[in-house]
Amino acid sequence: MSDSFLEHFKCPEHYVRLGLTGPLSASKGFFRFGPENVCYGRLYQPHESRNGNLHDAVHDVKFDQGEVQIPFDIDEVVENLRCEMYPSSARNEKSIAQAILAAAYYSVRPLLSVEVRKYLQRVHLRGWEKISFPHWPVDRSVDDLLERLMLFTLQSQKAERIPFIWFWPEGAPSSAVMTHDVETAMGRDFCGTLMDIDDAYGIKASFQVVPERRYEVTPAFLDSIGRRGFEIAVQDLNHDGRLYKNRDQFMQRVAKINRYRREWGVDGFRAAVLYRRQEWFKDLEFSYDMSVPNVAHLDPQRGGCCTVMPYFVGGLLELPVTTTQDYTLFHILGDYKADLWKTQIELIMEKHGLLSFIVHPDYVTTEPERKVYEALLEDLAGLRRDKGIWIATPGEVNRWWRQRAKMKIVEDAQGVRIEGEGSERARVAYACAVDGRLALSVE
Image (cartoon, rainbow, N blue to C red; front, side, top):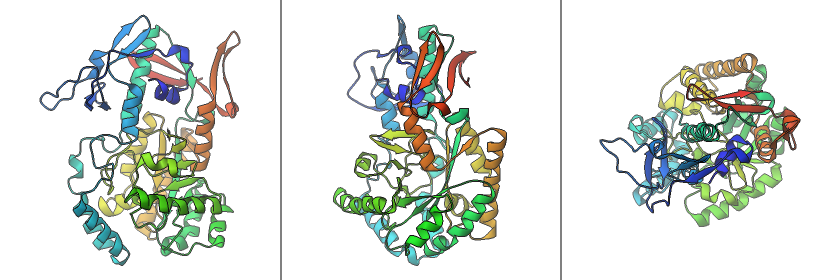
């Protein structure tokens, strides 16, 4: 039950002794693990919520001869959150009426003006600000849970500090990726200009291209992206919002999607509208996916993975979307400032997470939107210069995270070192307790 902990921290296993307080109940429910950390899963002894307050399972933790005994299975709870296996609409299970309305909307969507689409989307999303979980504007439940367990591990082992492999290469405090979902022929034709804008700030991005029906995709168009050092990923099949409608249709479509992966020679995938069913990801023949939001209050499919870190779903690496999309910012919230992005950046960097952005070439063709986007690029370039964040492409993050997963940290008479492919870029870090709080530092 410590796999998710070891995957996150990559510390020597002998430090980690986690056990259960006792047998778990059959029923699942929400509970807290600290003042603000919400979890979902089975507890040793389920507790009823009182006055709307969830039971805090921190009070049930015990220490026994170096072992931390907790009243739930860590791996189960982490998977429930990452894979959105908690009560919500995140599983994309619609009623018949909702399914009919969704089908009708996507059938006429290409004919609707932006103003009409904005109105319909605002009606659909009304009440979003009252949703308490996941936490808006960034949910860090998984990251908080694992950090608290590291604090308890330090306490149980009576260790001054525990070494682990830092999250990002060369000790970077966080990583950032820029992605561009190309939705229309107008967006496709603007890609060259958008690459010029990105290059002006020294930032390479990934372009998610729809293979069928939306616009013509020529080898020359794909080459125009690749030869400039930008990446390409497959975006859905035809962007009609029905990829995950049912299992049979998904399997028919995923066969074509996988064929485009092979033809284009790419490793990344993103579903249209960020629809997802993570239990079906195993059928995608990709190395990484970028379809899961951190918190999805303002997306058609609500929910969220509750983490700001990459994570594996079987053999597929998920690079979660950790910030608000540009379309949502401009056309749902009516916000033409970068303040929300700045707030999200601060919250993500507090956990040393992945800053993942979606900016569509379709929606930054006019000056007001472009100015906001350029302000974001300027902020990111400043963070790279002043803080040392690693601005990478999704493919680079995928390769690094897979390398890190196979590395190991070694302690012997010669000191502490990291072994494995790519270890020359890795850095030893230490976890320690300072005034009862976890502190992480890079050697």
